[in-house]
Image 1 (tube, rainbow, N blue to C red):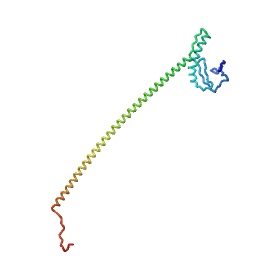
Image 2 (cartoon, rainbow, N blue to C red):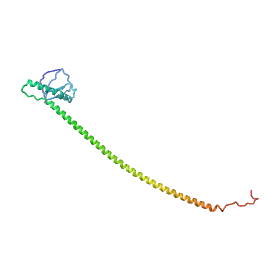
Image 3 (cartoon, rainbow, N blue to C red):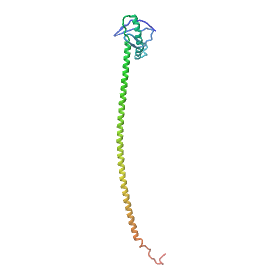
Image 4 (cartoon, helix red, strand yellow):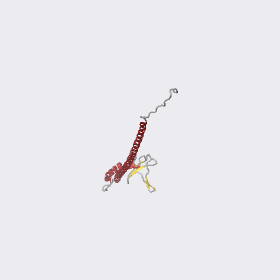
Amino acid sequence: MISTRRKPFPIGQSTGVTLPGSMTISNEVSMAASDRLLLVDTTGEVPEDKLLEFYMRFIDPAFENWWDGVAGRLLPGIQVTGGACRRRYLLIQERKKDARATEEEETTDKWELTKQMVEEYEAEVSERLQENLQSLLHISTSIRELLTNDLHFLENKVALIDKKVTYIYQELIGDIEEESPVTRIHPPDLPEEEGF
């Protein structure tokens, strides 16, 4: 642990402070600060947003509480108002909460929109299926009517053929009956000598 005082020096528009040589210092460092305190990770391993969160949660409130007591003893009669960083931290947390609430609302809105789109699509598909089913039923009825008509036509043709066959059969039988009972054909009489 190190405790020291250093004189700041100007560097362009900024002000620099020399870090003690005994510290491990990387090419980049991460920092979190208020208007008076500075927290630096000289290795740069801790991301600056996490460092700021740590600073605002733990260091700034503890420092403000400690400073209120110390300043009251060191500087009697001066009103010390601390907690500016803590107020900023709470404001940031409130904004984050608002952002999460907005994100949840947007997610809910997206879910509702998606649900509505799915319901509309289902209704459209159902309507198309009903139309296709009606078309299929109509086609099926038409085919049944055609087959029924063809069947009746074939039945009529078969009945007509049956009548014609019956008629022809009766004609033939009638012709045969007219010739058959009276007329019999006998072979001619041959002399016995000439016979076999």
